Image (cartoon, rainbow, N blue to C red; front, side, top):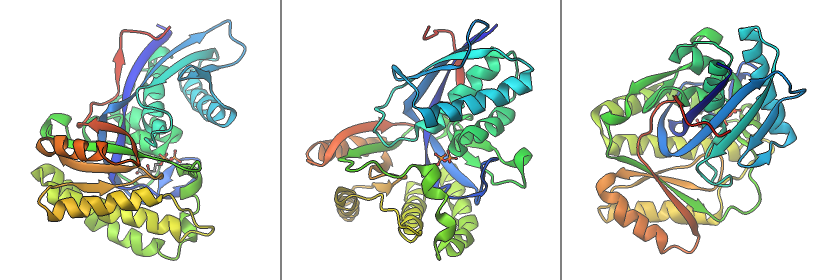
Length: 328
Ligand code: DP6
């Protein structure tokens, strides 16, 4: 078989990955912990076609731009080398979420690409092997191979740095991650470039020292389905990722005024008894964590806010898997 289609979910990190100790191997400074996002999926069909002179990569109907293309080709080269094949590939990839949603399409994108390409190349890899390989394409993609709640252990080196499931999606089906898409302003600095500056922040060492305790607290909160504790850790982590970004040299400001406005609303809702917590990735959008029963009132409140231009409601999502319906 030389054609395969895979689907993978993006993920939201409760304990964040922000900084590498090895650039090309994408070994992180710290372990991280995330949940797969059920509604933020990428579907990728790939075929190794003998007649092609170069890899043909189409993402959301457009030929991939140069930097993105080079990253995909480098990943395909790794897989060709592992499988001992030379053929160029035709790749068509579609995201279910808008390209400017600020959702890490590299996580779902490289997870789906890794599974589709290895399958099309005739390799049968385990979940651990797929996660380790996906990590080389994009760090957060290591967490999009297993489903549900996933910890990416920093590990000692390439072999031990991979995502492992802490709990399956059905462990906590009522948990919601509501993404509030805000007016984005100028294009933010990408995660890869942003985290490359983390070492220039004078606060990085203090952050890294706090991570083991936070990971333990977040892991236990997931196992106990304890939203208050998971929310507390997620907010500490979101604030600290942005503290590192803002104190990097040069500084990176991902927040927009609307980001802070929404954070303040979340705090006000909580004081009024509506249990919601926030987390924020490398962009202005705010992710709201809540239970299913509170998602309706939160969505209604978000719909009233002029700065909110889109809303995506996610439950815990599945792991990367093959699909029999091909895109070409
Ligand atoms: C802010 O996985 O996109 O979303 O490994 O350079 O591709 P690369 O970085 P990437 O970084 C994601 C950073 C984050 C936090 C997180 O998901 O943990």
